[in-house]
Image (cartoon, rainbow, N blue to C red; front, side, top):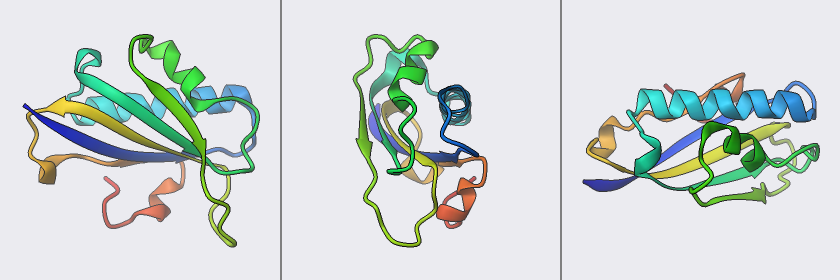
Length: 120
C-alpha cells in the first residue's frame, strides 16, 4: 500500500454556501469513486478557495460525508491577476494500491480548463 495524492477542482457560479456544499460533496464523491477511495484509507484533505469565495469553508461541506475523523484544512488560493474565479481546489492524501500513473484527477463544473493535461 502506498500514499497517493489526488487533485481535484470545481467552480461555483456564485459565492453561496449551499452551492459550495453541493459542489464540494460532488467533487469529493467523484474523486473517491473514480479512485476507489474508502474513508478508512484517507490521510488528510487540503482545500483552497479563490479569494472571492467567502460564504463558507469547503471543509465544512466535507464533514457531511462522514469525514469527522479525517484531518481537513482550508487555505486561500493566491490572488493571481487573470486567474479563474470562484474555484475550490482539493488535494486528497490517501493510502492506495493504485500506481501513481493510474490516479484519476477530477475537475468539474468548468474547472477542467485549469488542468487539461490531467483532468479526467
